[in-house]
Length: 283
Image (tube, rainbow, N blue to C red; front, top):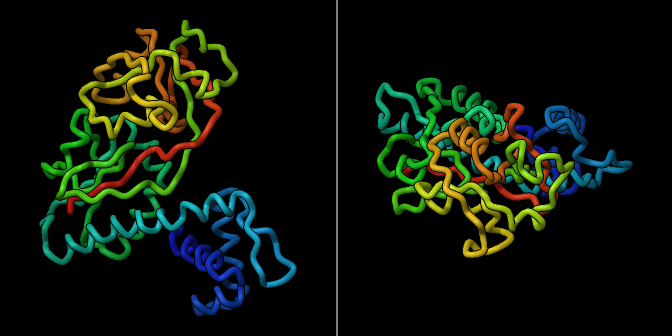
């Protein structure tokens, strides 16, 4: 995703008028329109109702995207700031800027967060800074930034440390419930999260609560009411294997759940969307 297109869209939303938004970017209205059309093609959906006048009316999808797009640009700026600091101080010397993801989720997280577009802009602006992605074991999510194993972490929770800055990810997500083939919900077409909360849910006791809360539905009920089953996995592959062998279920979002194999089922979880995580960097 071209972040310049996102910035143009946000200017259009802010101004509510094609002419004024185009002037802020020193563009013609036609050129701004082409930018918005390119962004719509990238996203695969219309963002604005095609106007009779220069005034702007957002589609439902456009409103949702606008709500998270500012965070998306802030998210990209965080990575660029780390790269600028590396270029200015030589902090990284000859080594890459290290971007961490929970082990086994990297490819899905890169797609979900639009990281290829961010990486492309970082390389264009700071050609001397290399980027490297690292798989972070689940049990090391809270410590990998303070101990400088990685420089930026994308995960489903914030790192609470005085030397670390955390920012919410810019996107919300649907949820799926992953269960074994013998689970009572295995053949369900869909599951409402409020009907699911009484089932045992997989939980890793070695992982800080900040990273697990969304996975046992802390937005719907307090932890004391959750039926948590220990699944001591340090990566997503092991997590899924242990899930197959037990009676617990797992809540996650679609990109992370795929692929499951024939012994696991992913009924969609109808209910409120949630933000799957945060981006954190060493301060």
